[in-house]
Image (cartoon, rainbow over all chains, first blue to last red; front, top):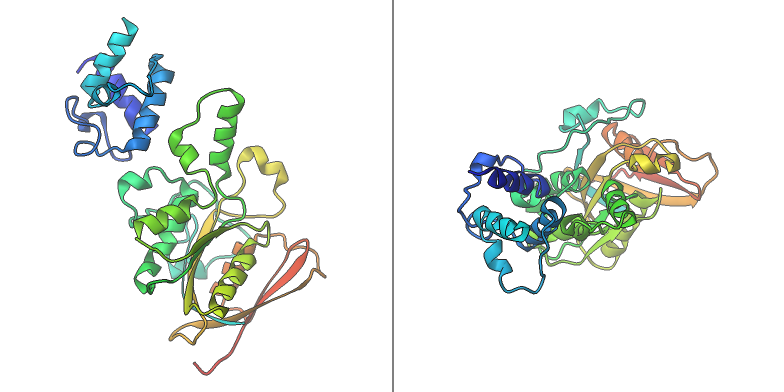
Length: 85
Length: 243
């Protein structure tokens, strides 16, 4: 797990107030929405906002690629790295 | 109007069981940051609730099995969730984006909405605020439903003291607490029959919140419970019936 993975997991737990969930509980590669962690559309908006605040990442609300970026912690990390590059 | 209260559940920090409430005194009101477990709410939903909403769910939950289809639901609160509102207003003032979760739950009927979704309730529902008179206004609203044909009404009241920023506007002693009761227009086994009347305020206003006053009287099994706001004097009188 990279430092960035760690930071993204911390962000998800804090911003979404995931009671009883620790960083170890979140699988870097597992889906965040639906089956995996079970997050929903409001969580997606909350994560989008947090990414802007914490990582200065800009998200195009109409982009078709958002679904792929938001798939897992790993895809969020790649997205943040690509934006920061 | 005679109203039978067949069940009443209340929660406040440190006051969870009937026995706890027997020791409740208006001298020292409960405070602190304790939250109820609200086990009836799925964890993924519960995380989004502040104490204001959690305590409403906590007290309403035990009454769910007793709800007949079509039972109207009333949620009332004097101030609503001002800590949540304050945070949103602060973000707006700083030009920062609002939390989608906080925004979606910032309306007065948010706890009611979540409750009816979680419990799959399709009956009429209403969220109400009426200043210091809120609990009595909710009771009267319930009476109007009962008078127009409903057999029973679920009344849930939840109070959270004003956020620190608004404390200078506090005009009575209050406490974080919620109470849920099932009100019926016909005699209920084990129920208590009460009648609420209103008159012009002739005595100085009560220094402690209406919910606290009501719960103190309820658990002391008082013959009457009175509360005076700036405008009205309210009195719940115990009605002795054969039932």
